[in-house]
Image (tube, rainbow, N blue to C red; front, side):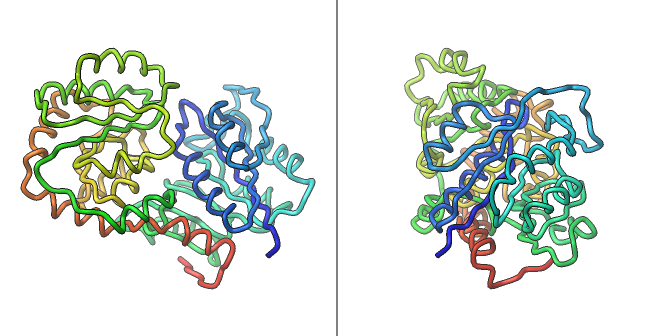
Amino acid sequence: MRTQHIAIRVDASHEIGTGHFMRCLTLADALNQHNAQVTFVCRHLPEYLANTLTEKGHHLIMLKNDFNTKTIGDLTHSHWLGASQQSDAMECIRLLGHQQWDWLIVDHYALDARWELALKTLIKKVMVIDDLADRQHDCDVLLDQNFFLNLKERYTHKIPSNCVALLGPSYALLQPLYAKLHQSLVLKSLPVRRIFIFFGGIDNENLTSRTIDAFQRLKRTDITLDIVMTDKSPHFASIKEQIGGYSNICLYSTIPTLAPVMYKADLAIGAGGATTWERLCLGLPSIVISIADNQKNVSTHLANAGLIKYLGSHKKVTVEEIHQALLLLIQTPSLSSWSAKCFEMCDGQGTLRVVDQLLLPTTKVPL
């Protein structure tokens, strides 16, 4: 089988977060298992993430990082790019022009059809990963793994008529371990014995601290709190100090996957980003606090469908509100039926479905 060459344009930073990069890395690992060579193209990428992808055998091309705050485009997230779309596209074309590429995958809120069209002079097949449906795309495949009641209408007139649309949690880009654990899962039920906290590796808003405070107010030494936060977070040291003396609070900082810790939990508290689909796959009832504007809409839809307990934006949620939600949910008699509903929403096979579409496109799923 011929080696396929695939480029991925994605960034990660304190403002952007790591979710876009991590889901692209999951997809890259799966593509690599199917004889594809993946090259990441990034302008912003912390060194520890760069080391992670090269250790996994992927290539990395870094764009110039001469951020200019005056370079603002007309998209809501244009400031994430650190350059104009045109200059970013031209630099990508120059750096990728040394060989033939089978696919370009782009996961970036600051890029739209103008950038994608420019890259099509070099790479004929483009896949876009999006969550927002707030801009035009010129692509062959579009992936939006989110849950919306109006899912199919969101991209009407925003993608070409012949674009293959992969929509919903059945296409969620999860590590293969989630599918394996999904198959052996025992649904959650009372009593709650472990609670899982994860607001992203960095957690700029320090929601972890608020949640720990709310948990400590429960005074439940029979419940264990599992926290995941990278030691690169500016709040890591203060979190360690906050949990000092609590034998039932565990802090994990360097783990390759959240899956085993999440699998053991009976209840979770976290943000409304990519980890949402991991929690659903493992049938884990969750309290959700949105940490970005783009998470509010999908969190509202999930809450209306009875899949999460949504407390609102990080800007407004208080320690007492988290405490009251915990107090209610650790004794809710409907925990098992809630867990079953989550379990049915996502089977963890999404990454393989996307790989099949890219490398073995036998089935078309037009919008």
